[in-house]
Image (cartoon, rainbow, N blue to C red; front, top):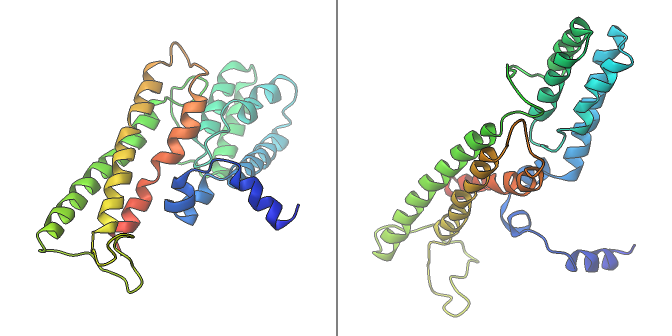
Length: 235
């Protein structure tokens, strides 16, 4: 496909402005398909290395294969995979071998902590804790940037104004606090996303429900735009 054809294909699809306009390259890559697939590959290799010296076969391998199928959606960390493996060691008859595999695997992927009690996945309260921190950051950033905007209106404080910067298409001479305005806009979105993990954690039924995946795939990457808020406010 030519470059022009590829560009037209991209133009025919919706792209999130959070990625195309606001998120940093590092954060965009962290949630990319390439990062996700390379992470899965590393986990499969680590698991194979842990299985080989223990000569695991049959039921043990099938149990540990939940690592590949159940919880491989979080590209930002390996927590889901760790939880699936912990569940596997409880239901197999060769408990000692699986414990050894778990220990080797955890060492390979640098897991310092493990949850003592989980279901098929880690508790969705973990997502609540993560996003509550980001939402709290959003609230603080919104407060700070709102103060800057109010003081800018009184001419008591001013944002840096770059040489080629245009204040407004209609009034180029305007010196609006553009960075503070953008921070407030993104911070409101970040705060609003807090409702998603709370709802997801509250409807997990007994062990888990399968209606959380689509929500988490959209909510978790978007919530990490808070990292870009910090970049805007800290030179």
